[in-house]
Length: 156
View 1 (spheres, one colour):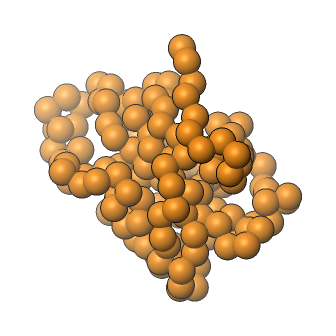
View 2 (tube, helix red, strand yellow):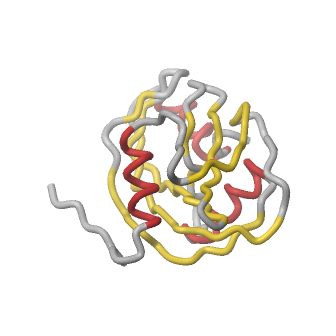
């Protein structure tokens, strides 16, 4: 399900008003390749992203999101970055800010495929030949790949 039930329930009361939500991003690595999805809402290529369910640990959420969206099993290697997104306006008009937890993950098993309706394509890309994507996603990939930068803090 693209939007968690608890968010849909909230939306019944507040409409499209901005929400503050915990999110996750998975940079899944297999050698010198990264797993990306092409989103169904705007056709953009991105790492796998999702919303943390109430009471769920972010590291557990990122593993769940990768499996739900791509059919791939991963192991979380480390938390690479935590940051707040600017206001996001989704194609349906919903607005949200996300506290995003970026995780570097390694491939364990599974054949990557479109596993839900959130994506129209799933593919492995060489890190040196990424498809065109928003700069924030390029930055997230760089941050997760850079092993010399164990944590990242973005000051206001």
